[in-house]
Image (tube, rainbow, N blue to C red; front, side):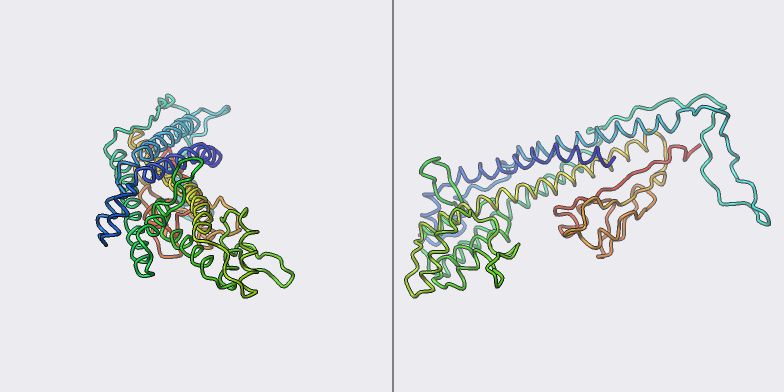
Length: 395
C-alpha cells in the first residue's frame, strides 16, 4: 500500500495545511487590538489574553478537514483489503493445492513446523466479503473525536501560553503596551489591510526565533546582527542551515549595510518600525512552514490510524482473530536527516493488531505515527506500517 499511502498523503496534506492557516488567520483577524492595549496599560495580563479571542471554535474547519482525511484513508484501506482478500481466495489454475495440516516428517525427525494450509479448492469458493469503512463504529468515532479535540486544545493552550510569555518578557524589558501588543498581534499592512506578523499561530520555538531576530537587529552589536544572516566560512561562503533561514532575503542588503555601519562605529540605522516589518515577514514565513509541518505530521497520523482501524474492522467482519495480522515497520524516507532509530526499525515485524513495536528510544508504538510515540517519533516522519492479514488463519 506504499504508493497508495503516498498518493493519499500528497492529496490530503495541502488541504489540512490550508485549514490550519485559515484558523490562524481567523484568530489574528479577531484580535481586539484596542482592548489588548488597554489591558496592557492596566497591567492586566488575563484581560490582555482575553482580548486575543483565542478559542477552539476557530479550528472548526481544521477539525472537519482532519475527519475528512480520516474517512478517506479508512475508505481507501478498506477497498484495498477487499481486493486482497478476493485475491487470496481466487482459485489458481492447475491441480488442487490442498496440503495436509502437518507437513511430512523430515528424515530422522518428527515433522516440520506447522505452516498455514493452502486454501482448499475442493469445496465451494469462500464468499467474497466487501469491507466498507464504518465511521459510525463507536471506536472509530471516539478515536477521531478524541484525537482532534486533543490537538485543538493543545493549539489553544499553546497560543495562550505564548502570549503570556511575550507579555511577561516585554514588561521585563520595559517596553510599552503598544509595542508589546504589536509583538503579539502583528501590524496592519497598509496595502492589504490585513494583520501581518505577530506570534499567534507560531510554535513555542518559533516565538523564540522571532524574538531573537528582533533583539539581534535592534542590538546595535555587529556580532549579534550578523547572526540573522548566519555564519560564513573563510571564503565568505554562507554555511547552510545557519542564521534565520526563513527570513525575507529582500531585506538582506539593508541588514548588511546596518552591520557595516555599526561595525564602523556609527549608530544602528535600523528603526523599530523597519525591524517590525522584517520580523513580520519572518513570522509569516514561519507560520507557513508550521502549517506544512502540522499537515505532514497530522495527515500521516490520521491516515495510519485510519488504516489500523480499517484493518481492525476487516478482522471483525471476516471473523478473524487479532493475531491474524502481521505488522511491518517501513522506513520510507531517505537517510538524510533520518531518525537513526527509525532506520533501525525498517523491516521489523510484530504479530497482532494491538502488538507494539519496541522502539530503540524506549517508546512503544502500535504503528508508525502512533501518537503514543510523541513528537520525537512523529514530527515530519515519513515511515509507514504494513498490515498483512492471513485470510486463511481460521480455515
